[in-house]
Length: 243
Ligand SMILES: [Zn+2]
Image (tube, rainbow, N blue to C red; front, top):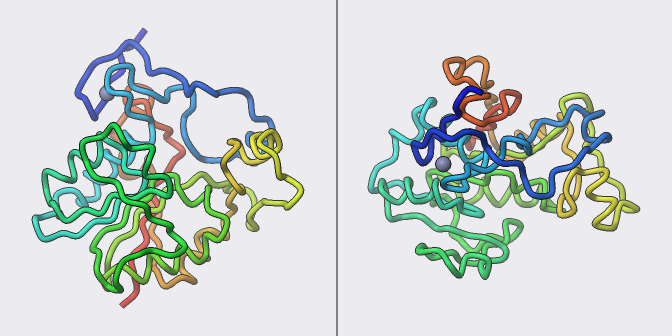
């Protein structure tokens, strides 16, 4: 079997490990949802996930990481250790936030409570905002998008990775899908609150952004998704605040 490579810890590994709760999701499959590769999920060495690795590859490829300097102000939501450790080498102006900061008691960096629908930060402040698979957890995500827009400077960049279905326009959610079991069945995870459709991209625009979508097969065509343990169908969603 071909060896795999983790771009975050630089290790060759025999295989990536599945997400512990991975199972079949027929409804999600029907909607052709684009999200994590739950089979080639964790790196057995550094525990990075497929979406951590993919985001790192994308941020490098489009030049976002190289453009960071000691003055860059970043808000990083649900900060993934392998990513934030690299960002911190570039700038100390990072607000790491999560709705449940107590989950980060064991990490070396400070994580503060941030509710994306009511961000405790001034207007026009951050250069870069990163939320990697977060919006699918937020009930009032349109308010969150407006808040993200508010705290960014003009032309500031928001990385807004989230699972979505490319075969439906309207988001799929229903108030009767109200238990962990039903959310898992219909949304793919018990703490997701919807399946986004293509309207996601219009909603991001509506919140005051230009949106770009970078496809793996276009800008990362030299990266074999099987070797790097990433989902080739997952593109990069980049929103740039309108001036
Ligand atoms: Zn690794």
